[in-house]
Amino acid sequence: MLDINLIRENPKLIKENIKKKFQDEKLPLVDKLIKLDEEWREIKQKADSLRHERNEISEKINQEKKQGKKVDEFIKNAREIPGKLQAIEERENQLELGIREIMLKIPNIISKETPIGKDASKNKEIKKVGKIPKFKFPVKTHVELAEKLGIADFDASARVSGNGFYYLKKELALLNQALIRFAIDFMNKKNYEYIETPLMLNEKSIYASMDKKAIEDSVYSIKDENLNLIGTSEQSLLAFHSGQILQESELPEKYFSYSMCFRKEIGSHGINEKGLWRNHQFNKIEQFIFCKPEDSDKYYKELLKNSEEILKVLKLPYRIIEICSGDLADWKYRSADLEVYRPTTKKYEEVMSLSNCTDYQARKLDIKCIDKKGNRKVINTLNNTALATSRIMVAILENFQQKSGEIKIPKCLWKYTGFKVIKAGKSKP
Image 1 (spheres, helix red, strand yellow):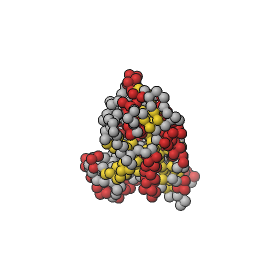
Image 2: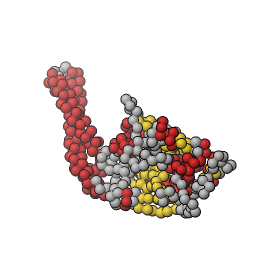
Image 3: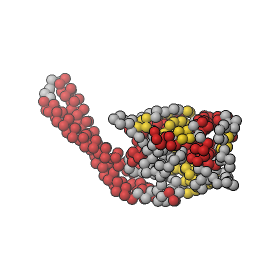
Image 4: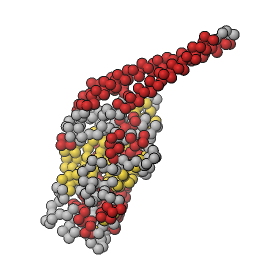
């Protein structure tokens, strides 16, 4: 949510930003918001004036009584004020709700680095890193490899849970845990604070991370309870400081979290395909930073560097894509995807998503900092995937497959797996 003062003072900037995101249907909302805001300020002034008058009359009654004077007229006037005030406050509340509803629809200001484009086809490739593997044999999909090696069962999961789930077995299950431990150790060495969060959040907390439509399309809600399963620990890390005022000297707060994630994946392509690439349930280690507004660009680069280091250590070929304005989520100021190469699709596909949300998310949850002079300002929030195990396992299986059907394990994971190669029967130590 944007700062109302920014909208009041520079509606032209807001409209230009909406046009850059190709959301012209939202342009009338700006004028409507300004009109409602003007009325709200007038109403609020009237309400404040009545409250002031009520206090003055109350003080006058006390003074007159002490002097033995009649106060009937003052009491009559005092009795009329609550009715007037109630009507004004009701309208004030209506206006506040209307203003907030519109503000939640107005997108965040985009960065100067964000390419202008209507859809994902205009996303900009920043760079490519690593060598694409060359195979002298027909490559197999991760599903073919896993089923032949007996390390996953997608048919059993389909029977008991439906599509979008999996049973991991033996070495693949151990590889999953190895990736979790590797990412936790990696982030811990970066001096980020490890937090294990709730896997369910109330509506206010979970809606703060995205817009309402995105949440409804992705999050599972618990029937008859104000609770929702998280789609990412980004959501629960964001809510961690909800309603708090932090000391500016404490910033930045750098966190990382491992969690199970649950997503409906409504509208996603390929959810009905077998395998690990797109699921309703998966494991992810997330990075999250709360910082001063002037530092968010710096920490955006830091989060990107962390994820690049992880992919480099895993020896996976990847590229970085700068997300264009039309493909950029409304709550984001800037975003980039890190994509790994998949030899089976012969494409780079997303494994990590980096976002600078500036103060857009934190304003929803009223998360602020205070400096030495007592000035308060809304904190900036940033997040990035450190590692999602399911997609990284796909990348490892497909990129490191051997003609024999064996899978070589990246060296950085050996101490966690206890084996260097997955092969049929028994893995090589």
